[in-house]
Figure (cartoon, rainbow, N blue to C red):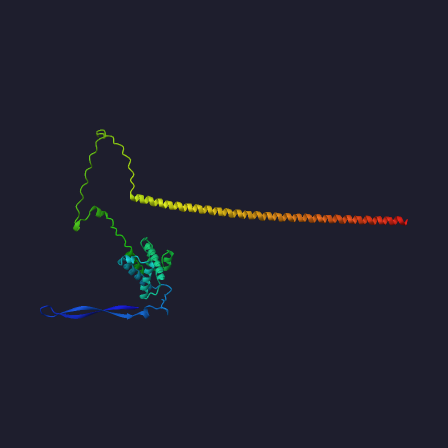
Amino acid sequence: MSDPISRTAILPVETRPPGGGAATATTTTTTTTTTTNTTATSTPSTSNGQREYRKGNWTLQETMILITAKKIDDERRMRGGDRERNKTAELRWKWVENYCWSSGCMRSQNQCNDKWDNLLRDYKKVKEYESRPIAGRPSYWEMEKHDRKERNLPSNLAREVFEALHEVVNRRFPPRLVAPPATYHQQQHPVGVGGAAAPPPPPPPLPPPPPPPLSQLPQPPPAEPPSPPHPHISAEETTDSSETEGSLEVKRRKTKGLGSSIVESASVLSRALLACEDKKDKRHRAFLDMEERKLHMEESRTEMNRQGFAGLISAVNNLSSAIHSMASERNGGSR
């Protein structure tokens, strides 16, 4: 980036009056502008041309450069007309970044924006604290850092930063001038033009005479009842009423659409709940059927075991009776 540097030289010039005469020596001021290349020292960048922004805490010099940039930006807005006032915040903060960058403050527009917000917040706290003096309470500039922190105040706001911010804020929002109230002496002895005492005010006028009694006043004739005013509707009222009706109609449509969507959602929810209940009933019936089948299988198994035991017992009884009859027959034949 090339910054022009202006140099001013004062050169003597000899002038002669018309018609001859002695020469008069005068001086003229000649301003020359030279350009120096400061790219290498003021705009460090990477190999691909992008800026390398500095990180970390802001120094006092960087803070003052930022405040100066905002001050110049506000002046540009006030003097530039609608074109400057209609610029977006992004373009304005980009201009602030470029100004800071050319002044040696290697910060991005986001860093500048955040720092400016923090500065305004600290300025408002200190200004509010200093604007309400209390007997026995120390000034902000006389306190230590830990005392400032205990009072919820910024711990490291420099006085020159505060004064610079005060100048910028007052330019943007100038305070209203209010005349001080007059003292008792000024009220009793006002001063006229030229410092002379003003003439005393004229005496108050005498009160008017009391009105005559009501009985002596002539009674006015009874007034006719006023006719009801005819309604008159202007074009503006008609426009307002139409706009109101249009907004009411839009609200009505939105409410109707909202009600229909609520009803539809409720019906979908009820169908889902009914389907869930049906599935539960089906699972319960299937479980009962399975338990009933298990019970029948147990009963049939018990019946089969009982019949088996009964057949076994009858077979054993038949076998014992057959053995007993054979034994008795053998005994009878041997005799």
